Length: 342
Image 1 (cartoon, rainbow, N blue to C red):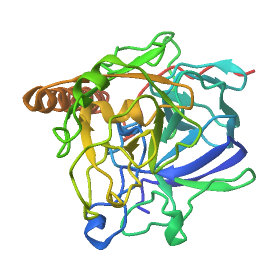
Image 2: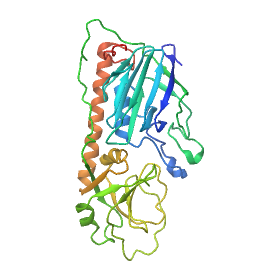
Image 3: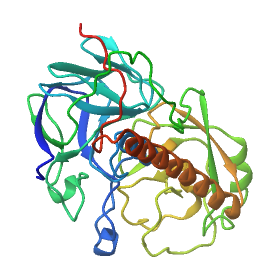
């Protein structure tokens, strides 16, 4: 811990249905047979960290459903992103997708998530936790669950000491935050062709014209969708092999599987499409009952949509860095008015 940092204890009071430490996953782990893992919605996790002055890949908290609450005895800087939810500080509502100054002796509650599946909570500074293969993200199959429990104390190393200004009643700036929309009844996911697309006659037309529904059998390995499928013909045996995140598998049953960040091998199933990289964060938010439609795009368009998403994140990073430099404040000390005490 550097001289400028201090240790802050965060006491978890409620732990949602599931709360875990997360970052953007393990690099190069898949060559050793270990899934990369990481935040299901990488966009929301990245933005949360950028807003508090952290690197995109810093450790944050990923939570699913229920209520997550924590107390802090010292000022901290936070940002909450992901699916729409209610965020309160000492009972007062505060915004999502913005940096928020939390005063000392405060209770923060995040709950009533709707439309999507996950929220992300980032703190300005470093959350102290164990790491596996260089990542704080869970890998339960390897005995590294990373679950956060009620009553647990989290340690934060931070240089943020609070911000007050007697004349500051409104934020001094508006950050260019790329906020996705989660409220449409049907989510449209862009897809490109897979290695077995041509072996499934009519699959292009079918995926482009029908809706699919996420089922309760979905998990961190992949989304299972209810809807019509076409089984490829004449392929023979497919040797199991590694596949990208977002691969569309058609197993022996009549369902569609979209592989997530904890997928392993294909298990010999044909791959008829891939979700574009820009669509993966939305897939990470899909909850049971969510309806989806698919739109075929060219590879060039898929690459450009990914580059555009990255450009927006980079623009946000530059704006935050410029703000820190202009105000000559410690890293992670963006001046946003603290909510009134209850």
